[in-house]
Length: 488
Image (cartoon, rainbow, N blue to C red; front, side, top):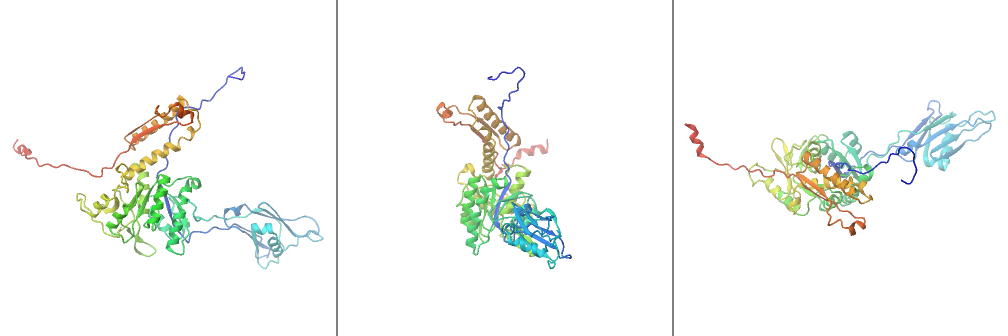
């Protein structure tokens, strides 16, 4: 204590463990086109009326919500022989009306419009027009703000969060790939979707280039929306190798999983060959699905990746990110674009061969079901999608919850607090069934005095996720000994 005090002092001790919050796992990153997306709306203000010919309409020069901050004031100078003038202060437009020798107002709507248009500062903010023939004398009006300005619903290359609302998604309009893809997702669950709209190019190649460039929006999503996408899809584009390769690259940076489609006409052997192109963050889907299009009043083929993403989000919400999505129903489809033969105990079916070669498919048994657990990884450690996702979610949760630990003094209590917090989190995950067990510790061999003097501290933790019962074996025996019970 360096300060004298005759009394009572409270000193707050800011140590102890911190709870770790699991990051949101069921966030879908969706990219595509929507050329008829709702445009921005310009704010406007109407003063006076057409009946009296003194009506004026002020419309923001730039469409969007920013126009709602513009105000217009019509002022009576309350003096004789004043000329009509327009002044601007920031977003405030002040129009001082003309008066005669008797102080009576004499500015007409047409004259006010002309004065606003002649002012560079005012015309940069608004355009003006009159109602009727513009001959009526304008009356004073208190400062009034323009209203009704709306930003573009889905600006190009900017991530927009759509939280399970078909009404919000209506801003995409009709046409392009995004409206149908959003419907595919919402048929499964009301997921949180990060939508990135790109411009439709003059050629397919240009559109694909726009898709690849627009994927930067997924990386920007944390800053723009507060959410990081964990499930990446690009329906109607992911069958293109260049697009799928970039999706895989973005998935690696985001600790995400991406679902890619094959060509609609690809055979199941084509799908198996395609799976060899990718790694542990890619799950290949085959075939496309058939859905009923209400606008065309007929069945159409659709890529399945968006519905698979919606299914993944539904399983995350209902059961947890550590559950497999295989053997769960897919809603809203009437069939598959190509037949998929399957039998529960037969290894020589199309479905089984696809799964064996790291391709997920759809079977029909009590409805249509997703069938397949595997990513395209050549490392058996990461062959199951749920294993990769479980590791990603835990690693990200631990990382994001330790901002508080950066730049703290490295002391024994500091080390104990970090270790204790992570162990508490791992125990919570174990109680939920997300992991079978786990532990965190600080290795003294790594945390040498030389390392600590550099400001570096190491914490190790391990865990074991549950694995899916992909192959269930019943061993059957015929036992004649039970015949003795007939006469016992």
